[in-house]
Every structure is written in C-alpha cells, then in structure tokens.
Length: 191
Image 1 (cartoon, rainbow, N blue to C red):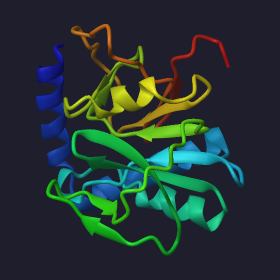
Image 2 (tube, rainbow, N blue to C red; image 1 turned 45 degrees about the vertical axis):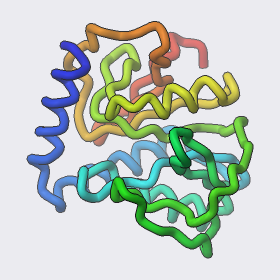
Image 3 (tube, helix red, strand yellow; image 1 turned 135 degrees about the vertical axis):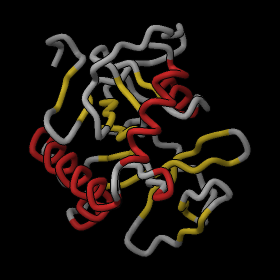
C-alpha cells in the first residue's frame, strides 16, 4: 500500500481504540520493550512525548521508568522547522505547543547524537522496518544525524501486515518494532 493509504487506514484504526484499550496496549508495548532491551543505568534514550489527542503510545510510562532508574532521557522539540533534542530530568518544566505536544520550556539543544536508542513515533511500520509517520520528515532528519550504533526502535499498537510500496531513497528504516505481542528485528542477524 502507499504511505498515504496506510496513514489514513492506521489513523482510523488508532482512533477506533478506546482510551482504556490504548493504555493497556501501551503497557504491553512497554513490558515487551523492557524485557527485550533491558535498559540500564546511565544509558541514553531518546523518546517522544505522546500526543493524547492522537492516541499515541503512552511513552510517559517509559519516561517515568527511565528517570526512576537513572537512565538519561532525551526528548524532541520542534524549534522553527528543526527537531532538536533536550535532556530532561524529574524537575523539567513543560508546556504544550500549538500541535498539542508537551515539550520542555527550554530551547537548549543537548547536541547529543550517541543515543543507545531512539523510541520512534509512527502510524505504521512494515516487516522491513519501513515507517509511516505523519509525513513531516523530522525523524528521518534525526536518524541522519545520530550515531550509526543507535538502535532505531518503533512502537506500534498494530502488527505489520502490509508493505509500504512507496519507500523513498531518503527514508531510513527502523532497526526494531515493538508491538503489544512481539519485538521484531530488521537487522538480519547483525546483532
């Protein structure tokens, strides 16, 4: 299927989830993530802050877990047309931007690029790691500027049942996908 079709289909599927279903599925995704990746103290994790109105995966569960275990947490912030990365702490002050995304008040880019992993938002991901997001390209830009060692991990409520037919040259595939039922690796035995 084409990205536009997948974007429409999976936006509708996500909207059809109840708030309780979305929360329970988010908890299962979180549990699968922790069990598979076993994040350790002082690791550096970049994680998106969910947009509740879009029923995105509740990554606040991840953030609370990481901060409680001395895992360094970085979140994205859009400044102008750029995505910057800000390290957050338990006392970081947030505000809601015009897109309904909670972001740190600070505009100070951490300059960090050597993350252990980037937990990536998406609407859909196929069995080759091709991601369909909202179409703005922010994460493709981020992926071009991070360490080659960084694990690019997508999280999604839905299994990858269809292929993305219109993959572009500048699309950067994910390394892993975490769903409520499994963790898929797209690294072809390179781990």
